[in-house]
Image: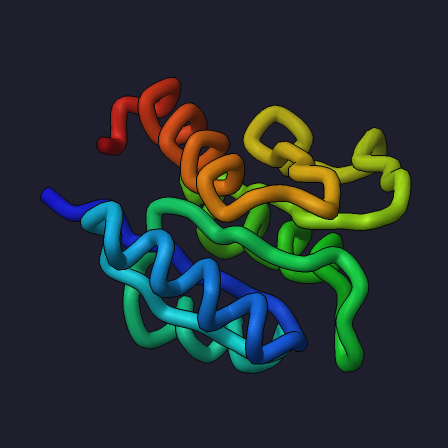
Length: 122
């Protein structure tokens, strides 16, 4: 069974690069440009993991992860950030991980595969 991933980033080039990377690795991929679009995607179909930028217009990756904690608590989350971030107050802490920018696409793929293997989803 293919794992389903949602990639959320306000930069189209990042979405395209990561989308192609994960599709090439056999994932079912959807993308969203912001938090409201990501929420709409989750309403339409389930995902196993979300890979989201932290800083975006219209809501942060933290906002999305908090929403997921309430609506889809089994979803794993991977936050992408070029800044130091604090996840201590996040209700999703045990299922949320950070990928520091800059990173190579294969590093993102490896991090997501690790998350899924720990969860038994892939």
